[in-house]
Length: 346
Image (cartoon, rainbow, N blue to C red):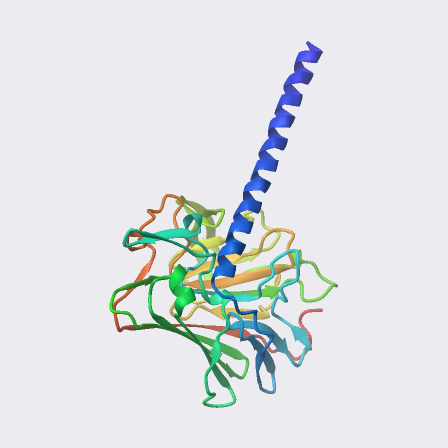
């Protein structure tokens, strides 16, 4: 009898180990496949060139590669607020997602009976942008236009212009999507700024919380492996904070569709948030702060993740935006930094 029980336990243990190894192997295959897609998007090396904007309160830096915010430095407290892409957690900092917000199922889709492959977050994060002439010292615009390489992954002629405007303690992000094609263009778009939590080694991430401008009651859409499931989960119940130690925080994102609040922040529990994001005209927000990781992201999105059972045809994916030939669409959100007299992060 004892041998029989021991045998059953060994079988269960072997099955569990096999499952975990299989998951890791599948994840590695996905990562390797996605890396190959990124290489196909451009032979150019990621730019080491940065653009800086500065006033008496903040200094920011923007990487030409992906037009990505790479530093948000608060002068009074001498604090870097933006996540610095430290491995092994997340190598990016504030990814601009276009023309795919998060991911398409299996990194692929079809258009007019032809299959296309595209990595997570689309094309924008993996190309060097062109810096446009500055109109003033507080604003810079960067442009990405379709070319032969992008057409291999995304068969639409477009211009995508990202503008940063620094004013006092606010950083305005503006995005302009221009359809230069003679056909309807399908896309999604979003921001992915991540912030240091903790900001000092005297604290841990458990000392921090998400903050909402008013108490809200909302479900969240269930996301697994960066794909939306056909299910919603109870989330916030008349609450205006969510501590990072809360067991409701999953390893995946917390996607709230049509979130009933304009400003979401991050700060020490019981304190004024040190950073806030006003979602602007983005209706949805994905909150991402995996347990045991020293960062948190507030991601304004105009749409959401692809569905787990989404059809392959891009024109049948109901979450994709449609932009008619010759038309333009504009989006914006704002990062707002708090400015206390003493260092609030110690």
